[in-house]
Amino acid sequence: MELIIEILNHVEVKNLLRFKCVSKEMKLLIEDRYFVRKHLHLSQYGLFPVMDQPPFAALQSYDGLILEKHELSKQLRIRNPALEQVFYIPNPHEKNRAVWFDFAPISGFYKLVMILLIFIALTETTIVSWCVCLLRKESTTLGK
Image (cartoon, rainbow, N blue to C red; front, side):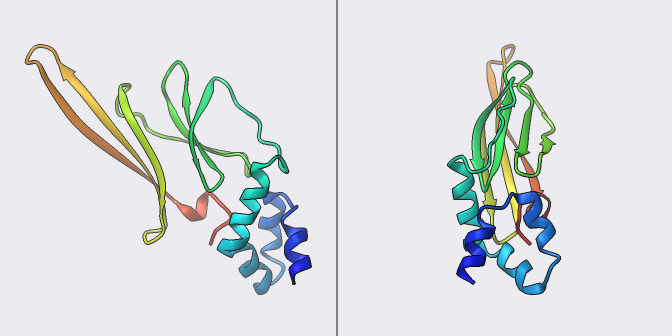
C-alpha cells in the first residue's frame, strides 16, 4: 500500500480525481487528509508547476487554493491551479482593507472574510462593515 501511495503522490490532481472512480478503497485513499496534505506539500516544492497569472497577485493560500487580488481593479478571486479553476469573489466595495481566508472543518466551507472601512467626510464618521463569502470544500479540492 505504501508503494501505491508514493506513486499517487506524483500524479497530477486531475488524474487523481479520475482514479477515485476505480474503487471504494482508492477513493478513500485519495480523500484521506494525510494523503491530501502530503500531495499538497510535494506540489508546493515544484513537482507540479503553478503558473503565475499577472496582473493578479497572490495574497494568501490554503489547501492548494490561492486567494489573489487584481493589481488595478482590486477584484478578488480564488484560484485552484491544480484543477485550473477560478472563482471570482463579488466585490461589495473597492476599499476592502483586510481580507482573511481559511477553512472551517465543522461546516465544510472555505471562508473569505472582508472587512470594509468607509469614511464619510461630511459627518466625519467611519463605518466598519464586513462581508463573508462561503465556498464549499467539495467544489474546490481533492476532498470529499
